[in-house]
Figure 1 (cartoon, helix red, strand yellow):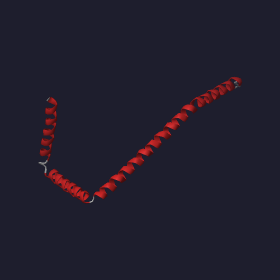
Figure 2 (tube, helix red, strand yellow):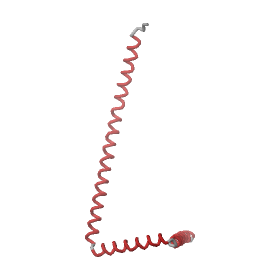
Figure 3 (tube, helix red, strand yellow):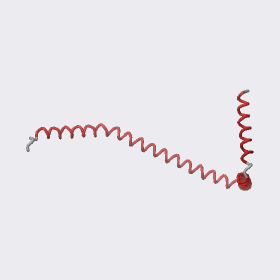
Figure 4 (cartoon, helix red, strand yellow):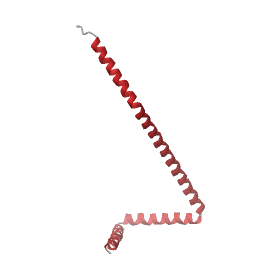
Length: 113
């Protein structure tokens, strides 16, 4: 029962906010224009359903290709991360060997002034 009152309160609050916002002339004008534009578009697509179907297909195709591209990018990044995991120990070994070689060379070179 309290959940019902909660949602009822939310709905009444939204309605009250909407009514109060319509007291402003600019807001009323904007709402009326938006409603007219929306009504015009809906009636157009009701008269031309094939056009709406084509737009939906085009958007779906774009979304599908975007998802495929993201998937390929994620796979590429995962592959590069795996390569780095494989290469890192080798690079660390080379760096250690180089450091040891230079530190041994410094010990062998006599210091003179």
